[in-house]
Image (cartoon, rainbow, N blue to C red):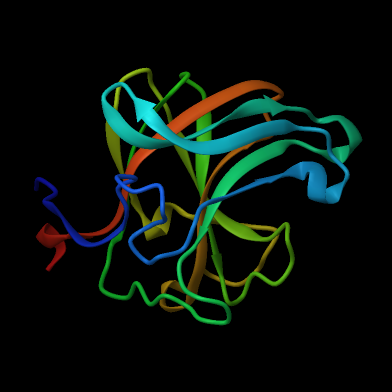
Length: 180
């Protein structure tokens, strides 16, 4: 049976540098917060004809480091987004051919190193990937992913030393209507 994906709500289409559809702004985060020396940036730009958020830099494993990330709070301070009813997250991106990850944080991720991750391959052409919530594995946390209390989403280059470049043009929650 063929999957039929439909968007249920937009996270960001990067058509506005003022912030995502929820009014929050993307933030650059790196391993510098824990003593690492990775360097990079995240900013809005045109990428192959699409408005995008570009994350680029150099990942270093020195000083127990190893990541750069662009992250977005999905709700205001102390609030959570309920994605119940969605199957997952649709992500349109292009990049340098490396593997990246989409990171989710919830009410349960209390430590900075805890998250739920789904790997995502990049290519030099724009592609839309449909990441089901089931594809998000726990990272340094025992609790299962609770999609009713999502706090933050991010794209992360992690664990692979060297240059990194990936651009996002659209993120949205989706539902697989063939599973109704």
